[in-house]
Length: 260
Image 1 (cartoon, rainbow, N blue to C red):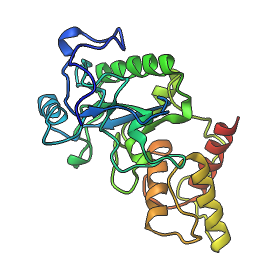
Image 2 (image 1 turned 90 degrees about the horizontal axis):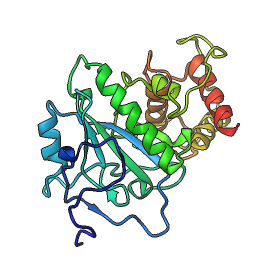
Image 3 (image 1 turned 45 degrees about the horizontal axis):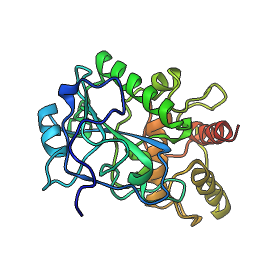
Image 4 (image 1 turned 30 degrees about the vertical axis):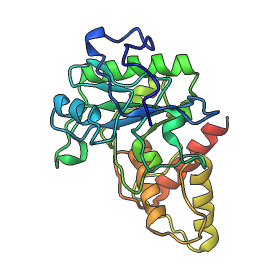
């Protein structure tokens, strides 16, 4: 497919330094009828920003994102927001599988799962993440529960932006969803999924949140990966895929928050 636009600098955000417009050839038109209603956050899993930029602008690699934020808080734009960048891959949320057509993707420079001891996102970097996310959410009127991590939409193969990403801080700035967790039980407290109906109930709740999951009544590998993704986003202090009392309570609290 021929790229549908020239490589001229877009005017999507006022936060971009013109020198940091680094156009990627990896984009195309959004699916007909698709509106931008999701913001998807990633980590690069690369050792340097230069390598991430090389990867995200390589025709051979066939991947891209709309933005990249380096460790110093510099914002690079690679694809104009009106176009479909190639960042989500095989993914699903709320029953929709063409996540690239409805989302804006931000890559954040961080090695993530590539390292045993994952480095935290720095202050300057998080400040830039917050500023850019606020700008995007405001312009596209993206609802809080559709500000997500790659791991949320692709729990079977992705972990980014990782359990060390500060979702609570982001939500405190008006971007994304957090909630009062005081009503949840203690982490690690036993919660038994005793039969098929209870497991189905858990799966139905996770699907109502948006996770891609079949209602099987079996606590299978996919269900465990979705629980792990949920914990990575909303209970990062203990990410183990086990439905303890706290995890079960947090699922209920999040679902109630989304419905309000």
